[in-house]
Image 1 (cartoon, rainbow, N blue to C red):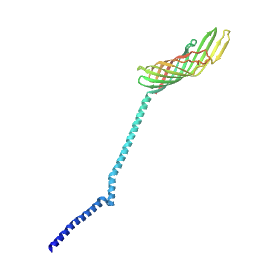
Image 2: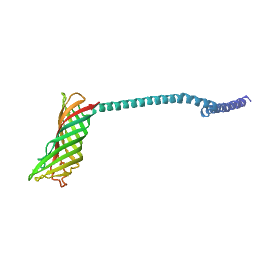
Image 3: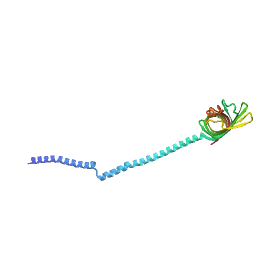
Length: 278
């Protein structure tokens, strides 16, 4: 009787232990699944809030700091660019000066038909701009007005023919100037002259004592082109005097006209005074 009872107890205990272990393992598995797999909502929300506070809040502060630093850098760059631009403007303006030039001299014509033309007078005034390229060299364009008065006289078969000519011109020389340390300078460059107006009066004294007068017998060309050259001396940084020579390469008279005064080109020598403003 005892042996079957013990056998039955042992078998029952053998089945009970695995069942108990399996049940215990199932409970632990469910608890672990609930804890790790499906965490409680309150714990999840608090964890998420804690994570967002600990993770994103410093990032926002860092972004604000980076943005503030970037704005400072942009302001510094803008300030630096403005200073550089102002410096370049000051450097450029310091090498540029404007002034006035007044001149007076003598004028005549050269060429095949200029034998009978005398030396006349020329007066000029205008604005001058000096742009420094280096310590010695500068470019000096000018814009001026000139008034010329000259005359000619010739004898033809005992008859005396004289012409009085008055001309108003617009002169645009563009000179390259080389200035030496003692104030002496030389200049050379092209010049274009536009003939704004020209009037002349031709008088014929006949051998019989009669006299005839004719107006505007010379038809001038619209433009003259030539070369100007000069030498001068600067008193100081503002005032200077110079001698200037100009010779035209083109004819003063429109060759398509019927005028007999063809083949003449302008030539003049001037003494000029310049005052520069700062």
